Image 1 (cartoon, rainbow, N blue to C red):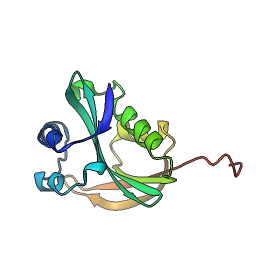
Image 2 (image 1 turned 180 degrees about the vertical axis):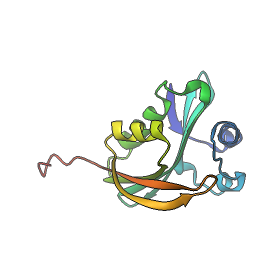
Image 3 (image 1 turned 30 degrees about the horizontal axis):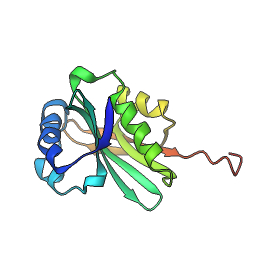
Length: 146
């Protein structure tokens, strides 16, 4: 599986993946306002099978959305997207994200990558109304010994 930054040519396929495999899809206009460096894709045989949308501010990042084609779930596409992003951005010291409290597979994925729960937002999500779990990842700093 190949992980890379998306190009403008990928946008149509990413939007289609979002609409068909995200239970709470983003509106199409959100994708047209993204900076290319914020959108990463996972490819298998030249098909986009997953994507992640990141926002980077100085040494912090926020994961806004990660979607995997249903056929490719449990084949490590989301895990590879997380790993590649972290490896490519050695300056990133902290990543935060929000996840539906009922999205156990995503929560387990994030925990596997070292994210921990730091807070909750009551009634954050709609359709259905649901709490958000806020999770955080911090880069391990070997020079400080922790």
